[in-house]
Length: 467
Image (cartoon, rainbow, N blue to C red; front, side):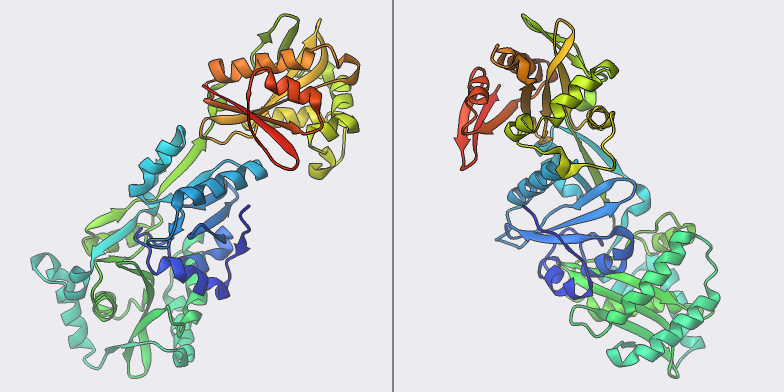
């Protein structure tokens, strides 16, 4: 089971172990972006199978994973994805990936049969060839060269130099002046400015590259980035706009100082800001770094309502209001819960009301996490069959429990077999799983009636059917 830790400033060294060699080219696969936006995304990280796994927390999307970052020659991405799947299954969460490199899209789509892929233009990174920004050579960059020449003519004593930890006061003075000319009202832009100011305090760390344009002891522009694989990722580029030409001067100077031997410079996204988009396009990006959001689905996605299933003696259908008393009795039966392998008290949310169990079952189906079938004999509820723990790769787990007064008549076996047939041949699963305690002979017989043994551990016997 993955054990996640919150990303903090002291996490940078662990992150850089992976990001320093990462080939994805996207800004989210960098220590700087993770630290800069950690108050917004609340990222956490874990290390498994030679890979870095990061999960972000979104109020809109819930858990959103980055694509695993492997150590070259060591990392096993598929094994890391298996760990993500297991973690999601345990949490009752859907495997979702928020920033997937384009080259890894097919891998995820092959792995998960049902996916929705989004490619939001607002968050695409601007990628430039390192030699282009370092030299601004050729007619197409004549505009940038003209701006730089004018800047040099107006401010001949201005120089580019590296920033060090000793420049803290000068950097803070720059921020104070920059705030006075900052005129954007957009909340996202204000947040980015606040986060950038905090990230600049990492100047002096081994992984941080930082520079400035200085005139007579005063900073006119600052920049901060890091190298990830063959890409220089620029996290911060700020300049005082009253000094005409300071931005192209800063861009070229920073690129020339830090991109030797690299192929790409990533100047990150524009978040839909019109001015930023215009500026970034003027520097002629060679590529746009798409960030795909891959949301997985399971077979329940296509099920509009819980169907009615019939067997020789039983009917399986949706739980109803009139089932409340019998269903509560089933769910509150401690002896049945012991064999079920689940105690509702562990996950009880709020007060245990008369409608609690019905509402949980309905909520799980609404989220397409599970199907709770009422098992009926002559119209009366005598138990339930639950299809749950979908792995989003074509498999799920099936369980069945019957009220004690109806036990011993083969109803559980009959209901389980009918639900299994529907799951595999009508819903479209390719693999169905089940398990029971070693000492639960009745469940063992029920599972064996339509599934094959698939191993055991100290607690459970496992069964499955593959079609």
